[in-house]
Length: 235
Image (cartoon, rainbow, N blue to C red; front, side, top):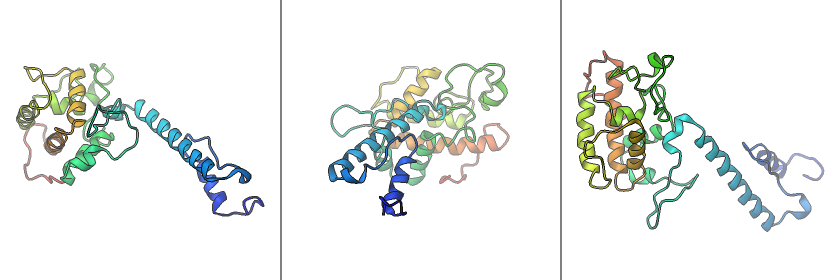
């Protein structure tokens, strides 16, 4: 049927392969289709798919937390793996903590929850001042990035208290500066370090979720630092 140009599942499969994003492959001609040629095709599709996905991650500002990510291994050094069952999907047991962490990593919290992407680690210019600066500390130069709110900003007392408790907890596993203060570059570095560490991922997922709940209440009200502790913790 395929050789005769009649629609069939094999021609449908070939169409799907040829229309995969960034894929330049197709089914082998009928005379040379074999188990070996199909296994080679699967291997090539996997390689091209991983390459395309990794390129999109590497060039997306919203996905800065996923860039240069090394996946923790049960034994041996961490490895760069484009597609796998991530450790936080199995190690973070509470679904609302896991969801908040996943949304942060996948860029789903910018610009709705946080106005600036994690990649914005440099001071704001005049054009960005109004829309990108932190709504809590109101610094004219400070971008409202996730890592700024989580690890730097001291304008919200509730978040600052949570942060101090969290840093004391994770310092057992990851060495931290004595001052517990971070530059923009350092805050991005340490947030990634907390997430991609098997010993701290559950702690940081809880911390991220609790901060997001406070931050949403803070920004949705009068920006005076008050918040409702009964806010939906599953949000």
